[in-house]
Length: 620
Image 1 (cartoon, one colour):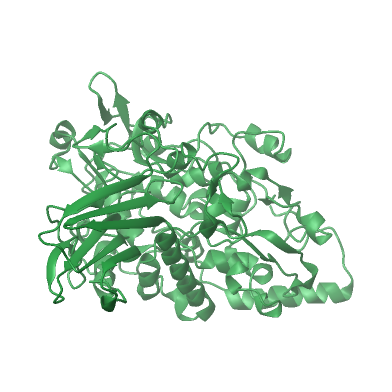
Image 2 (cartoon, rainbow, N blue to C red):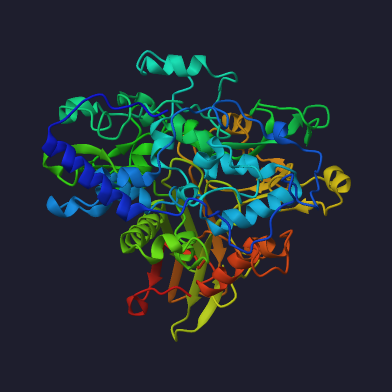
C-alpha cells in the first residue's frame, strides 16, 4: 500500500495541492481498460500460445531471468502522468527549451514509445508464433510496468493497459536498484536486494531489481537542492534516495545487452544448440548474443575515467564516457517546478536531458498514424510536439555519429568512415537497420558515369551493386536447427530462433580489441565465422577504395543510415501468424511503412569533390 501522508499543512497549501491534483487528473485521465493492441487484432489461444508455434514446448521457465519478478512489488508504479505536473510545462517562465523538462524530453523519446512501437508489435507476433511464451521475454523490456504487474500473459501484449504503452516509464527507471551493491549506494538497497530470490549478477536481458516500495532514486540530493523532498510528501512517496547507479552505464545495459536464453553455446559442436525445455538458464555468457550495445561500450575507450573528447555529444561536457553522457547530455536548466512554479528549484549546469536519444528517427513518424497508438497524440499537441522534437534529436545524433573523409586521385576514390559513437556503428539488434556508402560520379557535362549504393525511395530498394559498402549484421539458422524446426536454413529475421551469426562488419568503437570483443559475443563475422582480420585492434574506422571508369569532374559521397529495410518490413508482414488479416500488426506496420517514406534513409554525413556548381547536395 502507498504510504499514508502524516504531515499536515496549512489550509492554503492544502487547497493548492488539491487544485493541482485536480488539474493533473483532468489533463491526464486515460481509459484503464483499453488493451494495447488494435481492437480487432487476432489474439493468441487462451493459454497464451499461437496455434502454429514452431517451438511449442517452450515455457515461461525457458525465458526466466533473475531479479524482481511479476506481482512482487507492493507499491504501485505510478503512471508517468503523475510526474507531469512538476516536470513539464514550466520552461516558458524561465526561458529554457521545453525539452529540458525531464517529462517533456522523455515524452519525445523512443523509450516513451517502447510500448506503442508498431514495429515491435509486428515482431512480437512472430516471436510468439516461433516459440511459445517468447513474448514475455520481449515485454519485460518494452512494457516493464505491465510486466511487473503480471500483464504479460498472454504474451502478445493484449492484456496490457493503455498506460502500459508508455514503455520505459519514469518510476521504472527511478526505482531501479543497483544489483551490485557498493557503499555509495543507498542503505535501502540492501533491504531490497536481500528479498530477491534470484540475484542479478550481470547487466543485460532486462534482469532488473526494482524497489518494491515507492522509494525513488536519482543521482542528485533533491533535499539539498530544494530544501525539502518534493516526492515525500507531495507525491505520496517515501524519501528520495541518492543513487550513483543512475549515472552508471550498467543501468542502461539492463536492456541494451540481450541474449537469447533458449540457445546455449555447445563446445563440442562449436555451435549454439537448443537448451532442454522448461528449464531456466541464466548464464548470459553462454547464450546466443542478440545485441551487444552495452558490451561494445564496456570494452571501448569510452569506458575510462577521462572518456573521449567529443563535445558534439556531451552538452556541457566536452568529454564523454558513460551512456548517459551522450544519450542524456548535460544542459543548464531547471529540472522541476513545484505546482508550476520553477523559481524554488535550482538551476543546474549538469541537468541530464531526459531525451534518451538514439538513432530511431522513423518509427516516431508512424506512431501518430497508428489506429490505436495515435490516440495519445491526436488530442495532445504537446505530446506530438515532443515526439517531433525527438525525431529531430535522433537525426542530429546520427549526423554526429560519424566523420567522412574523401580523397580523389585520377580515377581512384578513397573514402574513410570514422566511428564517433561509443559502440559499433550501427549498433543494437539487427532488425533491418543498416548503414551504407552512396557514391555518385559525374563528368563535365553533368552525366552520371558511376554509381554505387543507389536507393530507390519509391520502392525502398537498395541496389546491391558489386562495389556496395554496406554495414550490417546478419543472423540465421544452422542447417541442423532448420531441419529440426522445418524452416529454411541460412539468413533469417526469426530472432528468437536464430542460432548463427552470419555476418557483422559494423565499425567498432575506439579501443576495440578483437579478443575481448570475441569473448563477449561482439566479434566481427565474415561468412559465418569470427573474423579477427576485419578490423585491426584499435581500429574505429573503415576505408573503401573505388575505381571509377573515368576521371570525374564531381564526386558526391553520402553515408546513409536506415532504421528498417524493405526486406525486414516485408518479413514482418509475410511471416505474421495472422497473414492476410488487415488488423494484424504486420499488415498495419506495412501500410504505415508505405505511407511514410518507406523508412527513408538519413544522410549521416556527405562530402563532394569537384565542381562547386553542383552544390547544394541532394539525396538521390
